View 1 (tube, helix red, strand yellow):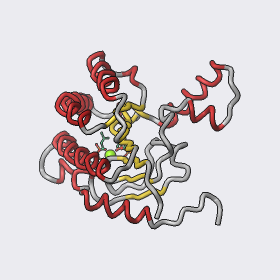
View 2 (view 1 turned 30 degrees about the vertical axis):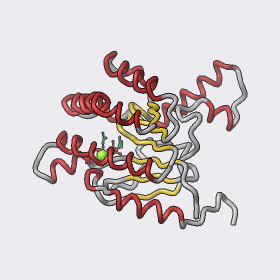
View 3 (view 1 turned 90 degrees about the horizontal axis):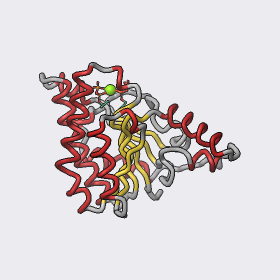
View 4 (view 1 turned 90 degrees about the vertical axis):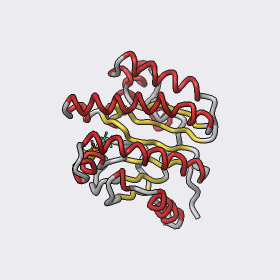
Length: 225
Ligand code: IPE
Ligand code: IPE
Ligand code: MG
């Protein structure tokens, strides 16, 4: 059975869920947070050490302002309401993505959450916010040039946002779409990928458990036979 250190998830389908349930896209985003909570809890229960959630991409700025504002409002609300509970559970929060684009208020909330939880050891929750894999790679290369160090695999890895996090063993994407949408392109080179038809708010702990079990039974070759 394969051990699981790191699960990465593209939480897709909130907007469609809202519309399908005769409400708004934003209603779907709110509903999606219940799934986030359940999945974090289950990841802790399964003793998995790293969970990376794709919450907002560098391309999501193309969306209507009203939706973007609501997403950041939800983010703020989530941190204000849940950070102490997460902290008590031993969750360490790490934001991956370009924080420079955020308002001072959001920036401070994120930074405070990271600082509060930095010594926690139960689960590292990487939240991908204003994250784009292409930007991350270019940024890493620029850092390498600045530091005047050679371009090696290990130097590149050290200069990614995900520095310190092992590559995802498995990547899950909900929402019935089979693409990576600029998420962890380098880090998923050998991840097992699971595309799920269900929209994110409909994704259950049972669905999650089934994927984890399937992963555990997969033969991973890494180029070998
Ligand atoms: C994913 O759900 C969450 C974010 C991008 C913030 P979507 O908002 O992409 O939902 P769909 O894919 O439009 O249904
Ligand atoms: C990917 O979903 C980003 C997040 C889940 C945060 P999108 O809905 O933005 O992806 P595309 O645009 O359909 O590829
Ligand atoms: Mg989508």
